[in-house]
Length: 583
Image (cartoon, rainbow, N blue to C red; front, side):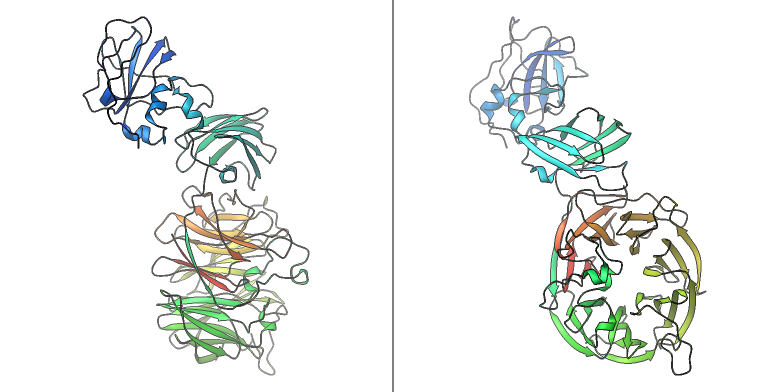
């Protein structure tokens, strides 16, 4: 706030003057601060500093002088210096990227009190260093015309001054941060851009015509404000998959969400159940002999129970009064009922051909048979199991009440890697072969619709790492080539969006309940050992990421679940942690 205590009447003189006159709006309540400037046509040729209107005296003026007024809030928003500096900092016309005062709330001619429709932009010397403290690393630029991240280098040669260099052959810009937090950018050839009105929280928006048509959005800070709490369910060293598992790659591995120390988790009422391995890191159930179901209270995040299980509970899902698990035990798949203490109370064979009895023809799998999707939808337990010969996916459903089998479907040449509930009769299944998304009818056991990616999406070395449902569309996430989040309707794949201010590859996505944002969990590595995990947010209305990240630990995320308090839980199986995230 500015100190406006009375310090004597102030008189204002503007060269060869007429008789003194009062400020026309001194008693109107329209302004708290004023200045007088002299115009020569449309150019400002002289001006006073900013003065408190409560202490104004009659002023001397020329015929082309105008009085300008600003509200206290408008000036306070600039975090201005003390009053003496304001008074001595004479106003002048601003050009280029010089910081400028907000438009005055009132402007009148001193000769007759008539309103002035337009006032040139104004600045003062004190504004050159009156910007907020913004570290160069906090500045980011979202490049709309690119389907991949354009790295940005930012340096600050002086206070409130920045030099930006955008990769992707776009070029360089000089930036000036204004007192109100706006960022003014001056493009250096060959980059040619014109400013457009930015929409908050953007600090600047520019439409560029060279070297290519492109819209740039600049930000000066993080817009991701999350509270993250964690449960560390094992005291172990973080796991990193070895080259023998993923090859000489520094991108998230194809099955990254199924590696680590835990298989899956679910939330039933106030109970959180985590299917944990035997304390050793794994990249499949074939390496785990047994494990435990760890139960935590969703509010206090304290462990309330732990129960040993004989097999590998690959997937777990919530029911009204507990959980169901999809379990690999002695080479056979079982559907297991689990109570809120983590104990298996009932177990039925999931499918005889899936795990054949003597004399039955088996279905063939990869070395580690894996259930890639498992959930409870509309009273049905639904599981997708990938098979190797013939290549495809078996989809099974059971009645949750009595664990009796319902529909079965065979999806040929489809590798389902993730799925999500649309409604009580429909799930969407992400396919890692094409890639594509299938709308699967649970009652009929058939695919009703599918949307395939356009030909320009490179199908070599892509990895479908997640598919989720927002209520309006599917969000499919690719995490290697063409990495990003793709909104998908039943008719088409919409434009990809990427994390633009960080190297993280999106892995898992889930809409925040009741909001227009989605939480995105990702990871990235440069050396196959360090895999920093982070949380980001996607604006579902603009289909763009917002700037900012929250570091969370190590490795790729597993399942993400929203609880009844609208918190999102994120499993970090490589780090043996479960996160509770609140907006």
